[in-house]
Image 1 (cartoon, rainbow, N blue to C red):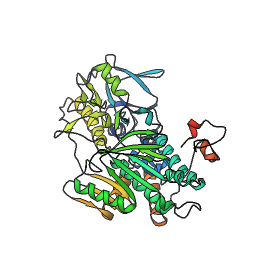
Image 2: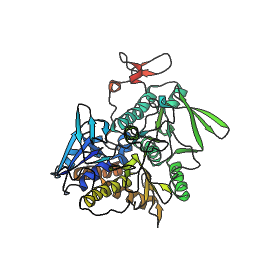
Image 3: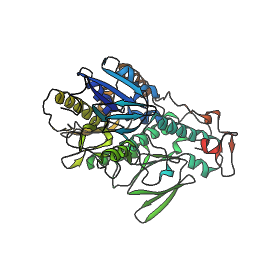
Image 4: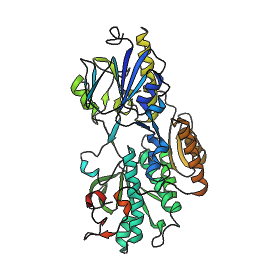
Length: 452
């Protein structure tokens, strides 16, 4: 029996985090003989795999977001709380929020990860990552503001810097961002400006390892690199970023060091665990890996606390000698597994260890270009792109999101237009002044808040 189950009825399951892991666990418990409380500091579930399309103006945030209460409205045993968890008390079996407490019999922690700047946290404002809606909107602001600034710039070198986009990290997110910006610059925007030629845009994708998409088979990485090159992206491998300062990216390749002026630098390299991992470490003594993820038992519980589970990107579980990747399918399967395990425990039945079923990996590069690895077969090109489209439509949470995204993608495909090219925030008033360093800003506003 789960700890405390004999003292309370119904059994209470608290879930921290409404991402893929937490949401799929809550959905799977919808008909279970338990009471569920899902806690998240956001009131919506975000479909992160398509966040880069918000950052590049293809989709709006609402297209890939679903209100948690709406998704779980048919789960009569489920309550959703909007709040931020600051602590847990394993002995008293309590989750501590700001201003309130929630007791639990079983706790599921699924708070995910954030960006990792490898000890250079000051780079975060200079090179934003892509994990939240706010991140995506900030990226979108910087990308489109760069073209606007270049349109006004008369100095050729400064204009070249505005038209240089550097993406750090050659994993799926970096590849997708690079491909989307290339299509934006070389296709969507090519007729929209009068003083600049957007075909002069320079897009750099930097990867520290010897090839992009390192988790994929070498032949797929090579094909992805070739597709990016065809789109106009310059791929730099074995390229380590050693400094970002004054809109200049310092890159080391072997013994060669290059300084690249780039007004738009985007981060897609490395992750670190959410603060909840430290809380769990301090309260339970559970071991953490080098980036702060929680090392879990084979059933996804933590050592010494069989009623506390950690799932999704926050969990470190090795299978066949390798840690499971931090991707949505892993989190989905883990959420459903823990839900089933809880039901089996309550029924007094044993549960087998978690086993991830890998149905394959895929990444989109651009129009009609993607790579798919299903294990038993690998393919690229148009067929891979169509497969990618189908999978992402299928896994969107709500029907209206599926319909809207499908229509939007169809429209974009035939017209090559993007309907969400908005520059938001104070900067939307326009870039109307230049300081002594050549930085554009909005008079009357703090330069630290409006600089791109």
